[in-house]
Length: 172
Image (tube, rainbow, N blue to C red; front, side, top):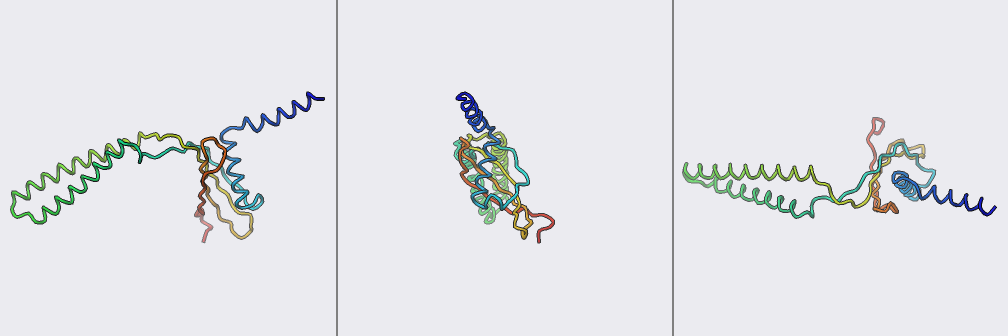
């Protein structure tokens, strides 16, 4: 009989321990909605796949350097435009136009580098994100709501949540 209790306890413990990341994230989102809205006050319509929440590129030195260089090309452009507005002869205008073209070319190169960096950037994992669509069960509001949950890297708690009302054909 002791072994039967042990086996039941082991099966119960392993069921909660061996949940997938998806199941754990869904459980956290459900618990959050239960505490915010009440367990019987909403109905989940759709649950998205869990995804990795990654840091942005803003703190990366190479990206900061590119953005500083891009900013400097805008300042140069503004200075050249001011000088062009007060140019006195055709020779000055030609020189300033040539400088503008070089600055424009540099700016395009830097913008392409920035775009390439962003397209290839894989930030450091900072946690998880999961999205759910739900509707309220109050009989008054038939709108659908879209909730995004940011979850810590250990899948132990919701860090933040944002809900938006989905626009549908039935919304006024």
